[in-house]
Amino acid sequence: MRCPQCGEDKTVKNGSLSNGKPKHQCKVCGCQFVENPKKGRISEETKELIDKLLLERLSLAAIARITGVSERS
Image 1 (cartoon, one colour):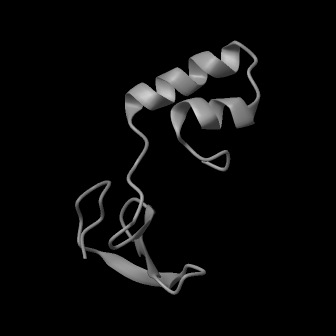
Image 2 (image 1 turned 90 degrees about the vertical axis):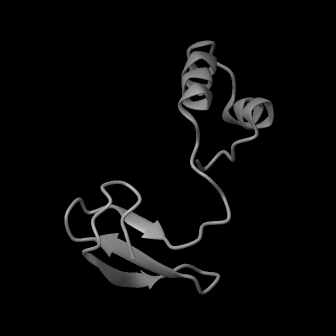
Image 3 (image 1 turned 60 degrees about the vertical axis):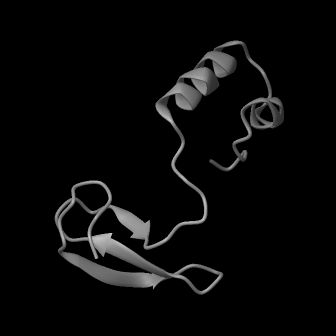
């Protein structure tokens, strides 16, 4: 199992998600990840758009609707 952040293969099992998928943690960088996540990472363009929308003082619910990213993310 390789870390998606640093590429090292020094990982340990670190519990599981509520749906039963095992979590792993990299011993080198400390990143926690799931082997085959259903959802992908948020792109840098989307993060920049969210930052701009936050500066416009939109509600989190509105930003979630506009960008398609959940409020928790």
